[in-house]
Image (cartoon, rainbow, N blue to C red):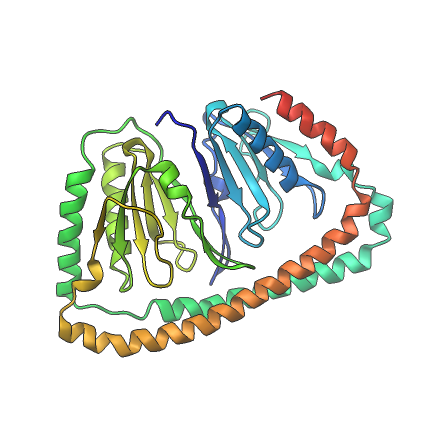
Amino acid sequence: MDRQVVSRFFLGANSPGGFKSLYDNFTDPSVDCLRILKGGPGCGKSTFMKRVGAAAEERGLSVEYIHCSGDPDSLDGVYIPALRLAYADGTSPHVIEPSFAGSEASYINFGAFYDLDMLRREREGIRLLTEGYKAQYNRAFRLLTGVSALAGGVTLSQESVLRAASRARALIRAQIRGEGSGGRSEKRFLSAYTCLGPMTLWDTVPQLAEKVFVLDNELGLGQLVAEAAAAEAESRGYGVIRCQSPLFPEKTEHVLIPELDTAFVTSSSRDAYPGGYARRLRLDSIPGREELAALRPGLKRRARLSAAVTQEAVEALREAKALHDELEKLYIPAVDFAGIDRLTQRCISAL
């Protein structure tokens, strides 16, 4: 793939088990240079990465942006593949520390641009707002536990699962052939529960794959096919981007194989793939009429409950964002933005 690609992912997810981080999978320590940004709220880390990414795009380079799952308008990372260079916010809740400091990763201390005397005078307000927004995140995590329980309630007959597996094998044999160049397998989140609601960065799919296969996933069968496609591509040596489920982070829900210009994406009424595709695998029609009739009342009931609980979780994330915004207002007057601008210009010049 030699065209310019601008892709967007999440590396963190608000999940039933708390914040789930994939930041240790962001770069390849053997070849990449990772600059880890350290510093608290309001010190300009996201703006810095937006400016570096925009400068790389202007130079015709491909760029991968990592959005914050708490506030998707904010960036937590940017990667420029041609330069093997990445910047990432390495602060809580996604703390990043290098295995071999200096050789494969180094720090940029944004805390050096704080007026510490000014911040000490705001200590009590900082403490209260920090505790407040973290409490709202914990509330959201508890509510997402309920959403995951409702989403995992479908039990299909063995016959239906076997028929889905048979269809998957036929599609995968036809589309994943030959041998790859030995690219590594990476994990990302394409979806997240955010303060703006459940969000999927669908625009990334056509950036990385011209040939898209849509997998019906109302009954959960799409994820079985996605997992099988990822395993087959990896066994043949292709680099694979596994997009994990924010509700079930151990499960793969979408698969991108850039070397084959191919993607397998799951789609349902809750989160329908909006783009064009090469083929749709209608997995939801696999169960027979009797099986579907027995499942339908439970599916409708769980969908209603899930929507209500999801809305409560989103409201908690919205409250967390509002408190975090208030926290940033305490920090911003204490930041030397002129110094950060000079740092940004130096990093852009180095591109």
